[in-house]
Amino acid sequence: MFDLNNLLASLVWGAVGTGFFIYGKRCGVSPALIGGLAIIGVSYFVGSALFMSLISVGLIAGTIGFIRHGY
Image 1 (cartoon, one colour):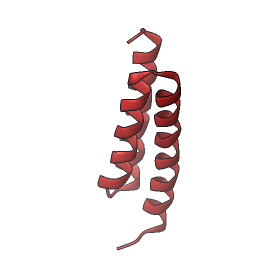
Image 2 (tube, rainbow, N blue to C red):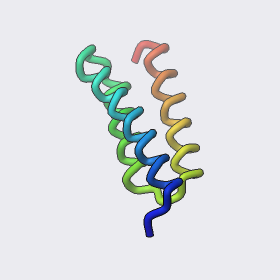
Image 3 (cartoon, rainbow, N blue to C red):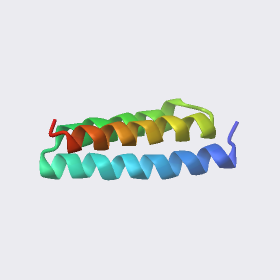
Image 4 (cartoon, rainbow, N blue to C red):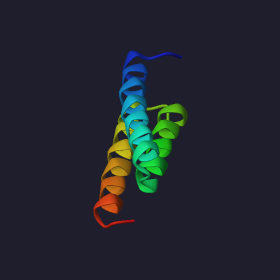
């Protein structure tokens, strides 16, 4: 079933993931590229808006951590 909360969360996290992916591709930063793909995948495969948001925030924090440490 389509739920407005899931649809909105998927739209938001898919856009954030796309932004990370484009940044990683243009600047050659592989953690951002991989993190962006992972966030996009989460928005497709997780059905709960709460779990989708929690996983996406964790992936964003991990991606930023990897970028700051120079990976």
